[in-house]
Image (cartoon, rainbow over all chains, first blue to last red; front, top):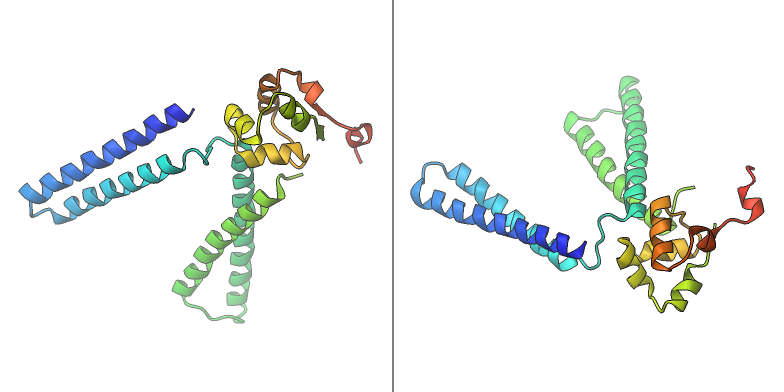
Length: 132
Length: 70
């Protein structure tokens, strides 16, 4: 499994380098399309960084761990329910005029709740061990 | 659920890390299985049994009162 992963990460790094070289050519020969060049450059850099990090961490990271997979999914489900309850509460508070928030604030609250609750539930479940 | 993983691991001179690597899971998962906090899938149970040269029912077992629906 380690060999397969190592090959996969090498491939990601190689693709990243190809993207970087391509971006270099695009910047050098086609200066008008700056947006495309910078996008290709960003993709290349991201792929190289991800490839290197994964390669370094592969010994401690077993992605196919069934417990982590299961608990991650449970964490996301709990996070979804929490966000759903929050949206419902916000809707009725807004409906009855108890709360007056802008759409931007509303979105910010929902985004923050989704991310924070998912991380919190997953962390809690990882430490707990399993779900009965 | 109770297990004999720790005992069999010691017999085969395997660390949690080594058993985890051989079965494709994290060390923490082996730790939680050993302490009875996590019930592995049938596939993982068979993998562990294979690595420890034993049968599944020799490694994993329930007390009678654990099997009774409450």
